[in-house]
Structure formats: C-alpha cells, structure tokens
Amino acid sequence: MRCENPASTIAAIATPNGYGGVGIVRLSGPGVPEIAKRLCSQKLPPRYAVYTPFLNDNHTPIDTGIALYFPAPHSFTGEDVLELQGHGGPVILNLLLKRTLALGAILARPGEFSERAFLNNKIDLAQAEAIADLISASNEQAALAAQRSLQGEFSKAVHALNEKIIHLRMYVEAAIDFPEEEIDFLTEGNVGAQLNTIIDGCEALQQTAKQGVLLQQGICVVLAGAPNAGKSSVLNALAEKETAIVTAIPGTTRDVLREQINIEGIPLHISDTAGLRVSSDVIEQEGVRRAQMEIAKADVILWVIDSSHEHPVNLEALNAALTENKDKVIIVYNKIDLSGVHAPDSPKTVYISAKTGAGLTQLKEKILTHMNVPERSADQMSARIRHLDYLQRARGQLNQGYCVLAEQHAGELLAQHLRAAHDLLGEITGVFTTEDLLGEIFSSFCIGK
Image (tube, rainbow, N blue to C red; front, side, top):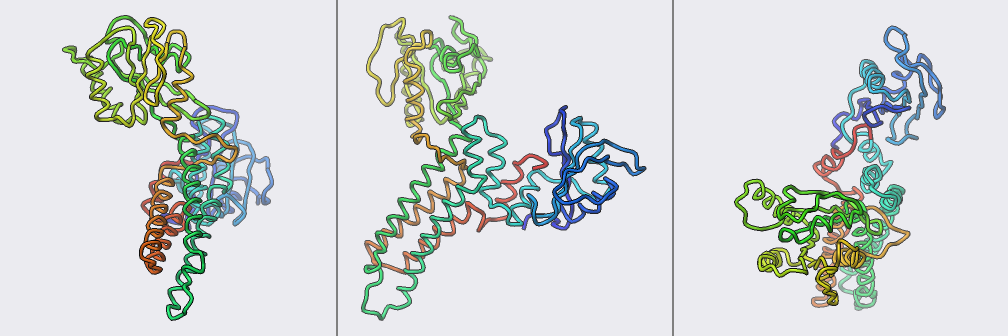
C-alpha cells in the first residue's frame, strides 16, 4: 500500500489559511492517546467535547479550546483520532501543530487522512473522491450530488452492476465446466437477455456519471471569432455583468478573459479571446496565439459573427475552425438588433443580440444540448472522468462479450469479457487499484483532509 508508515501518527491544520473564530488541528494514528494526555494533561473520554487548555512543554497554555477524542475503529480514519478546536489564528494554530510534532506526530501529506480511511476500509475510493468534490463544489446542486456519492450511492450502483456481472459470469463458467451435458446452458439460461440488461444498466450509469462530471468540472466554453464581432459583449451578457471592456476599436481584447456562470446547475467556464486576424502588433499576435490555445482546449466553441456586416475574414476563419474543431463549434450570429436577421436556429447556429438579450436563453439551451447534458434528476451523484473511462471500457467489454455469444456461441470468450468488465468496475471503487493511481488521487486533496 502507498501509506509510507501506517504506524506513524500524522497531524495537520484542517482549516483554511487565514483568520477565523475557530481553527482545527487534526491527528490520527496510534500515538494519539499519549499525545492527548500530555497536551491536555488528562485522559480524554471517548467522543466527548472537553474544554481544556492545550499545554506547551513547560505546562503553560498555548491556547484553550475543545478536544475531541475518537478511539479506533470508530473514527473517520479507522485509527485513533484527535481534533483540537482552538482559536482560528495562524500563529496559534502553527504553535499547536508544532507542539503535536514535538510530542511524536509527523506532518500529514495532502489527502493522507482520507487515504487512511480508504486503506482501513472506512470508505471506498469513489467515496474518498467525493470528499474532495464536496469541498470544491461550485454550487448547491454539485454539493448535494457530492454528498450522495459520499454516502455511497454511486458506489452502491457500481456494486449492484458488478453483482449482476458476477452472477452471469458464474453461470457461464459453470456451463463451460459441463460441456458433455445435452442441455445448451448458454441458450437455456437466457444469457443473451441477461447480458443485454447489464449493458443497459452500464449505459444508464454512464449517463449518471456524465451528469456528475459536468456538475463538478463544468463545461469549458470559448468565445472566438473576428475582431468586433461582439465576443466581449456576449461574455458580459452571459455573465450579467461588465466583465470585459467593450469598444468599437478592433483588437480591444488582447488577453484571455475568464468568467464562470451556472446554467441549470452546470458550471460554464467561459473564456473571451482576442479577435482572430493577421496583425503586425506584437501584443495582438500574442493574444491571437493565446486564443488559439484556448480554442484547442474548449469543450464548446461559440464562433461569434457580426450579422450586421459582411466580413470575408470571418468566413475564412470560420472555415478553418470548422475544419479543425467542427464537432465543438456553435455559430453565434450576434447583433440581430442591428441586422434584423432572425433566421431559424439550427443545431449548429443561433441568432442573438448581446445588447438586448434576445436569443440568450436559446444560446444557453444549445450549449447544454451540444454537450448532451442529461436531464436534471433528484438522484444526481458526483463522478469523475476516470469513472466515465472505466464505465466506457467495461461497457465495451460487455458489448464484445455479446458479439462473441451471438456470433460464435463462445462461452469461454464471453467469460473472459465478463471478467474484464468486472475488474474495470472494481477500479472505480478501489477494489483493484494501483499505488500510482492512489498517489495521483490523494495528492490532489487538501492537507488535513
């Protein structure tokens, strides 16, 4: 396992940097009872809030606050845990942390408390990731979804799907073991219908996970096009505030401007970029280069065109964008208040006025439709890109299994694909997980969590 020294006692400040009414130092490990006794000059009763001074080595108080002791295994990490709740000043908290280190604790790595909870089977890997998602949630809907995953709802769905795979796999492997029987077990057992049900369940869970990923990570939207098409005005209209400077002078936007909004609970990370054109201005050239970098990273490109003027450069740049990123592009005809153009929208086009707000609702809807955002549900759960990847690969194995069953009636090959799908789903909850993956996941957590 990745835990460098499971016998060590770790400590960290568990509250954000800065000043506040309360600050928390958290400890976990076998040394907690002795550290608590020396720090608080008493034996702490389990799960009681004890008001006590936190003592220095010369028995003078560093601070006075609440001590909470949770003996193993009934704690978040599954180990002995101590929480010291004192005043929320950085100097006091650092003195308190320094005292715990002097008493034998070591500094916790980012995510080490959650990692120990995972290693001690208090939570699975998907639940551990939900902790980080809950902390970083950008809106109420994302927080509620993360809370559902933290409570194990997403993991339960994965386990339920895997149970069906295990049940079918056991039947198929039993059929393989008795080839001399006259009964065709693969046909009599309705294996194809069961496998179809599992595939449908995997697809449904993929849709749930996709919604969870969008809730947590959002959609990267880039405004692109020629100078003076009204990109900055569109940004201001979507953000409903004056984020970008708007003038009639081409090339006003030099750097990338960023804003975040929410559409039906989905975060949109919007970037306004410099107008794309050939320029001798060194600064504008750099702006164009940065614009092209943003376009390459975008989930959705809103290609803004001034519908009140004909600009050949617009069409040239548009053709280039469609060639390289045509699956990402939505063409936004802006300034319809000036042009009077109100042509019917299509899946790839929308007509708006950033000045009057006409068409903005349709534009927002089109972004969600373009990303195939599932309908909102009370059962939403947080998920991550890696979960989607494993679900996609598991579904691929199940589909291959269905093909070999239908075309070759090959029970041995079907069993192999079922086994592969089972293992891939196990990666989501951490049943089968490499140390490198654990390191990558937990290193992204806060220190003290």
